[in-house]
Length: 257
Image 1 (cartoon, helix red, strand yellow):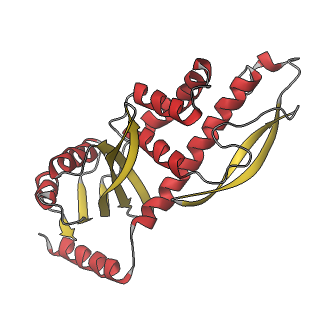
Image 2 (cartoon, one colour):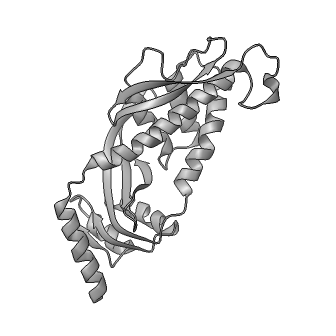
Image 3 (cartoon, rainbow, N blue to C red):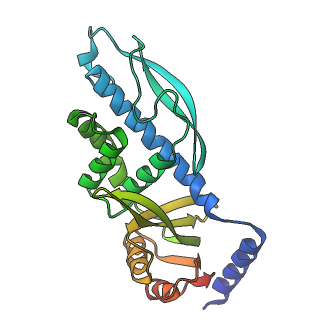
């Protein structure tokens, strides 16, 4: 290890010792992801309600149109969010994903996060949407919302990453999902990176049956394939084999529990 790298790691280790960082850092960033996705779903609902997409000429002379937004404050496991809810001019739009009197979004959050995780197919996402909207949702509504969400999800999952991250936090979060009429546990792998200019960024999320060192190896290889060349410090838990997985992909990375 070069003297310059040792100096960088020592400075970063000192910073980590001074600051308290936990899953709330991840939650704050995921909360923004959740908020944007819900607003996209609401736009899809409005398009289905009116029968035409935003800015489409099909709305000319239709008798109803979009009429700005109202704002709704909702609370969930990741904290409080303010959601922009579209309105129609006739006041007939009734949001389904978040009802007028609904203020809690806990189950909705976990489903949205699952949709952004690698390991979810288009069919899985459609199934999640049907669970969210219930059996009364039309096929056209589910299809319209899937068409809005999928390009955003795919772009987010595969976006290029920085070459160097001074600090990366790797953790697995267990949550419950419905599959084949059963509720089962899944592990959501989350990777939080600190960029060279000090910003926090969720590098990705991956879904698996449980947390394992071998799956972490595949996660780290994907980060490398998306452009990550070096990590100075990787912060992880004491999962057996985790350290070896990091060393296999990023052999020069310093590790902290």
